[in-house]
Image (cartoon, rainbow, N blue to C red):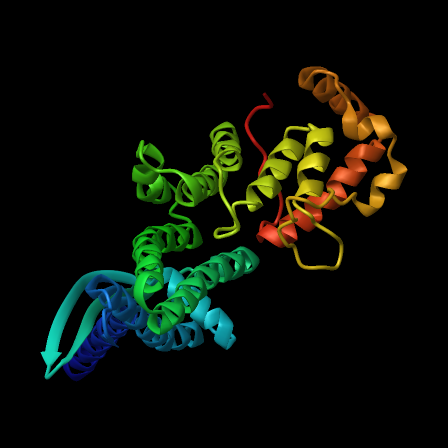
Length: 365
């Protein structure tokens, strides 16, 4: 009996040790992964040190995202999920967090180069792959916006490197401004990807509140803050920012035109179908084709289903409150043609923006 008791005690100890080791192993797998990445830019004649530093940082960020992808891919396998290369890159860009940055200028002979060393983290314990894959379409759209802005700066950098004299100075001034803004905007888009909408408001707030801010940066800052309010289901504030983005003079540098899509989604959610159709038609959404910004000189394309609508449905001058009440009454019995038309356009807008559907607001203005 005594021997049996010892064996039982030993078995309990071994079982407890196994549980502890398993827990420690799981903790290690979920631990924060530290990444170090380096970017280098060799300056040419009359190159700006600031541009050199920012270009080196952009290269370091690219390397960091690639390294983060290794951890994300490994973690996805522990969750029994198979991600494509693009999905790994998108998720890596969303979860990567820079914790330390160091810029080092170095002169070798007559050549000056900038080296930027980044320290970043990937916290696999904070990655909800299942949830992120549910929002895959929206993540991909945001990543496309981020990539487009980076490509713009890369192309501008190539022009800067080839330019001479006053042209080089002009491009350099624009590039320095672009890099400063790109850092803020990229951070905001990354926060949207993570669903950290409150942080987005804090990130772009200084630009929106800056009295000297104008043009493209101000318009895009309003658009991004509108995206954040939209994600928080604060629709009135989102609409205010989308309206401000449209009012602010801007060109095609940033995709501010997407404000129209979100305004259309909001109006549809509020049962203001005439305005929803108008906004979505203005954003040039067409079935089976990519969404592109319409030319300012081009006529607004009519939706394919518009032929089923009475002309007054697109140009009604009745107050919004009366239209909303009538829409609500009609929806109880059968969908109106304009509601059906708006619903079809909302589906296309949702696909274009990456939204599954228009969130339901708590109240209708």
